[in-house]
Length: 475
Image 1 (cartoon, one colour):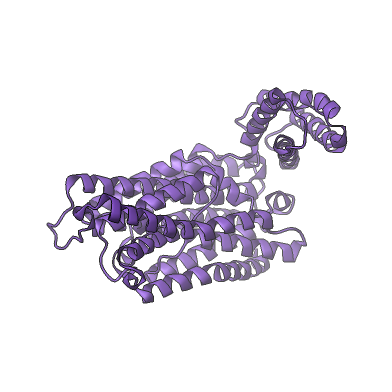
Image 2 (cartoon, rainbow, N blue to C red):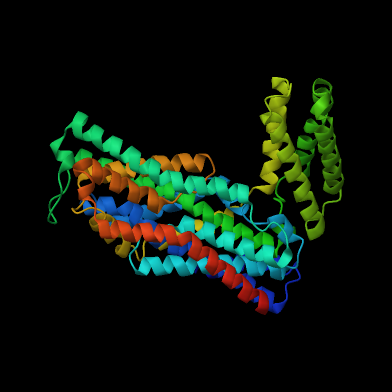
């Protein structure tokens, strides 16, 4: 159904671009693959939200899973696009648009297939593996393949390092925060009901504890959608920009008058800034040149001209980067009023390049929400039963999910992807350690999770790199 909806939406665009029969098939395969990736992501990561409410008897699986699916859907739809744009900046998007569409096809299909293969493999084995690590690794592998063939910068290593730090530090933060919160509940709150381990079908938590567990499940589901779902949005935008740059490299729904106004207000600030900061004349002159070029290209803009759209996109990105450099440079003498004007102009210009159409967000929302309702049980068992040597009690479940929701929500706010799987797993481990020490952890399960954590990045890099080489031969 989702695939048919995609076809219906995309057919008007296909007729306006020159895609050969083979590339057209690859294009639709890529669309189907990104929907499949987000679908797999849904059932792969559902356990992160529902394991605690299921194993504490707060909700039955038949209610918990659709509930989580709905809030995953809302999370994608309301979460913005900051994480999605961060994902896009990992790969050489601008360089790729200047090359034949087959190059983009190789990059996109290798990233998608590598991600799906590893996600499905770890799901089948019941190992809570990070879809985020998998996707980042696949994008690095695809970027390395691009570098090999086209001798350009295939990976934005600065962005990769920023994302890598987020992925590494977030589970460590989750573990430490869970230990502290659990100790607070244990020694300050001291509620015996919170530390009860439910047994039997009718052993359900008291109303207030049940509401707490349902609330934390809801928050994790929503923030999972707002963070992990955006990765799917970024992938779908990567496909659209790679195959249809004239249509999707810029947001054509933003009126030219708004772009022109942002360029003009920026231009008006430059003379006063130059007087106050003569040492920055070269940078300011470069910004003036970029604005002049963008104004000229904006006046000639044709939504069907891929080359001109590509050029205008690069100019706007260059202007936005320069403005951020000015406003973030504490050594520059810049009036507060001028700084405000520049930040507003930068925000307006960024909306032109960093965007996702509503139908893209809706497609990913539906895919993630539906995927959430299927295939959840394997990893739920690992989360609920095998990280510790005993089943979850109420306090452990609530602690892990409060920490996970807070960590993911903050990361989404900063536009950084994190691994919901690793944050929640480390939160559960932290809660278990705080309860009865490290002896309360299941060493075998933790070794499997650690091995998946260690192997995911290199395996997904090699998978995507190998697939890029294969597809480069045949596409």
